[in-house]
Length: 155
Ligand code: SF4
Image (cartoon, rainbow, N blue to C red; front, side, top):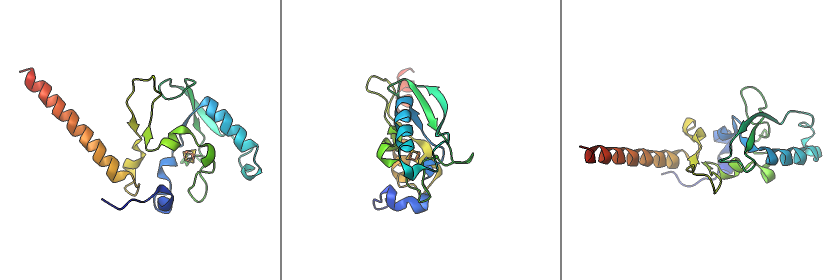
């Protein structure tokens, strides 16, 4: 196992791969982020631009039941809020999926299990790669053992 490194000290290596495709945001949080950006002169390059694009419905992860994706800086990405230094420019008000990364926590009333975001899988430099690969492997092994035990008891 590699020694612990934080994301911030690894950004020059991973180039914030997890921000490549943007992120889903609750529509209410998106409004708040838009206001935050539009009220600040340091974001003048973003003023008047489309900051959020595609809508979706998802009551399991978003309190309002509606979410919207952050726009991309170009069709290849990354998220429009990613800075040249690979740091999030809206870190203070970043969407909750970004704050929770690499986990995706559903709302308390949801039956969905906690999900692990899969962006780490395509980048071996991600600090979470080893840890999450091992976690996913053990989940798969557990599932296979359960399936084998079920099949055995059905004989
Ligand atoms: S909002 Fe910030 S942390 Fe979230 S995907 Fe965009 S740049 Fe990355």
